[in-house]
Image (cartoon, rainbow, N blue to C red; front, side, top):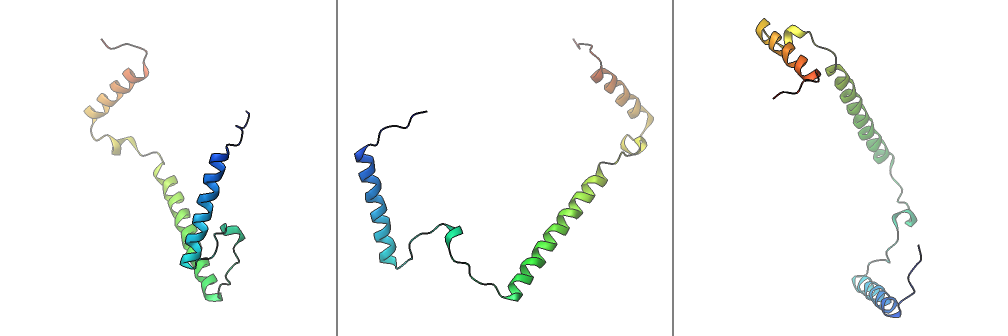
Length: 106
């Protein structure tokens, strides 16, 4: 894929936008925008670090509990509990036979 030739009008408009952004930032007294990975790190206190780790541990434990109980709920249940009486069981059996057969219902 080829890149289109540079259009001086677009370049001029982009430069003007950048200049106006910088002017506005200077007017507000805000520092020049920098990507977050280039900003200097603010040191954290020991208490802040511990609090973050505590939150992370709780989050991971909650995920573990969810995973465990999700696995528990997939265990097969006894058929008697799912389908109450014999008539309902017969209906369910007939329906499953129809569902798994290749017969076309007309």
